[in-house]
Length: 495
Image (cartoon, rainbow, N blue to C red):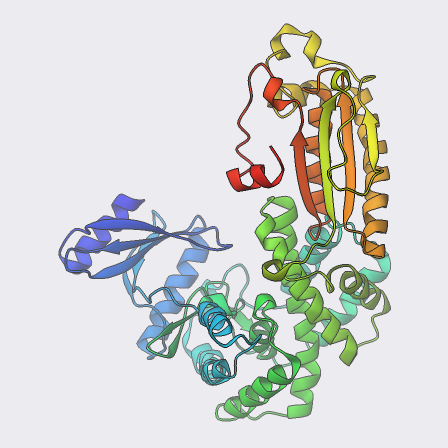
């Protein structure tokens, strides 16, 4: 793919690049590279796995660019390979600018950023209304409109990838009825403009003070309210409510330059689109965090929960009792969790594996108590020569234990006890819980159970800090390296 990018660079600039540098893609499944020429000319090489999504991005980009919108120029495109070369807009996103302003001013939302956001919201109606008249919606991906099917996809994304994976209780039949009510109401708003789909601070670049736009390949026909809701309820931007209201009014005034606006009707549907957008974001955090095991995405959940708290305080625009109960449970569980950057002590669960031959582990938390689970009644891989030099983190040992009923039954009981205790400790504001697993040698069964418990707590309770220590690790025949744990995390865990 990089060779194709180099060829496109040479065709456009007339010279080969001197360097090809990897550029992070946040939550995207596309890959980006910065190609730098000998005279410091630059471009961004991109590749995406979905041909239809790529086609939508290229088509939209060319239409927007021809009309004078601030989007990257497409320098070259190989549709068969799914590779293209585009204009380099720099490295500063709107979110980056907000973070820098916070650090400089010491304010959650610096006053200097209000004007920047207002400028963005002046350009948004142009994209939605004028841009919506220009682009070819026949290439829209995955659907031509943000219609009933699209909305239900988002709501089910939230249900299956957040609610179920985070173990948030709900009545499925009543929630589905509320989803139907919400979907019907959303579609009462006019839906004949361009809906950007992911109009948030990381998809807006700032170049010489002006906003430029990227990652609109999911755009389709839809309601105007969705995109402004996406920006103003962007989780980690954490825009205060009074600023949100000011920016919303600024957007409505800018919108009036393009279409007639019934303010009351617009706001009524806007509140509902805020809900569906926040739920879609939670589904994404759950999928990336719980399912794909990328914990950094879960750090956005408390921000989203605080957004839900503001929505509930204002009141839902519809009678959707089960949805309201679900949102309240999310708020109660996550809204009070400190931001990751400013996290206080919170709850730490210290998980230890040990050998009974060397006695019980010391109380690292200083609070006494906790669980000690005896794994010696489980089948022992250490008695088989092929597992003797392995440990409970090795795949062969994991398969050995998970292929037998005893460890599975034992795990179900452990999970039930530990989950209940963690929930109670969180409710009561406790800061330390110890969970220990012992076996004969402290190498196979206890290590497996400690690792499995740590993963489960991390997945189920993202607000909890988990530390793992295998006390006898230094005595194992072959100390294994664990690629899942970074060196600084090993040190924090006392390894």
